[in-house]
Length: 211
Length: 211
DNA sequence: GAGGCTAGTGACAGCCTCTGACAATTGACA
DNA sequence: TGTCAATTGTCAGAGGCTGTCACTAGCCTC
Image (cartoon, rainbow over all chains, first blue to last red; front, side):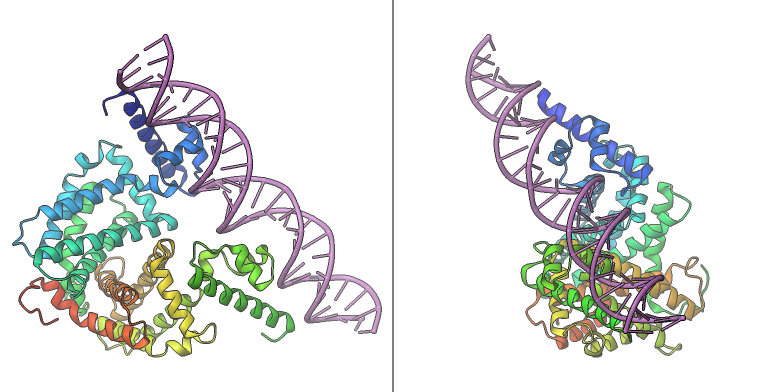
């Protein structure tokens, strides 16, 4: 981003992104039109579509950054680590460094608000789940390669990653519907839920009601 | 469905459903317009929207029947059964009786084709995942009630159901991308994957490469 | 069995998302 | 400064979806 042109482009994109998230989180995704976003930044509607593939695309622009970071974190885990342990550490790392990951684009506070908007907007939740599925496929291939198994012949990598992803989704959902929207809260929930999986799968929930 | 009016309505709805699924599975979901579906049944576009909330809605009309059957199957499982065992039996029952569930609306063969179309169409896959999430919430409440725990205080019901759902999704995906589209194949895959979960979570995939 | 009532329908207009085509503008660079 | 290329605005249009309104066909009562 050296030339004036590139800087201008960067600024337009960022302005569109912030305006969009601000509008989405305040008046709702469905009740925000693309014209409105473009108008807020004072560009034509056509220009908006030159920067983002669609209304949905801009809603996930920041999530995309965090997902990429997560994949990289997994890739960077030591190879001797057990797959699920690597995933666990990678997510927790992700939450720890969420500020550095996100703040270059938008304030973390806006990111967290958007996170909740996604979860409470059917159309966005659907897109979020589809995106998660795609990420899971990436991770499954990553882990399979690391463990030296064929991802298409052995279903276990995909199964493990899918189970892990399921726990993450339960966590997200509980955080969004709870009342503590702090960063610490979701980090805590993530760790706690990952610890609970074994106990949950046993299914004898009545005996040890220590929670 | 006694009066002539009601029979006519029923026939129109069914005709729209079959025409839509036929078009979706042959020329693709995105490349099929609502006008086309309406035209195939010789009604106005407006009439289509009186029977179905939208293009997406008609694509899931049959899935909705099978999901309802699944929820009922879970509800009907003996109360002493462990949660995950109840879910396992319910899905397998679902596949066994899929003919009776579906055939009243469309041929099973069309249903299975649509299943694959959903999985390979991003927009439909997203909707499918969102719908699955909703079903999982229902099941979680069901199991929690059965086991006598509070679904909002104890995350384990939701965790268990989410893990189960994750396995089902991996199964669906593998079936759709495979080459054996038979009913028996998906039933077999379901059982096999459910058996593999424990082994997958251990994460030591290299040692016993018996699969 | 005639007439009123109502559900179902078609026709039309309009909003919103998204895309293609073309012209105008603005920065880059010699 | 003048030329070139990138960026943008304007216009047109398809497709999903909704509201409105008048009309028709089935149903119900007398």
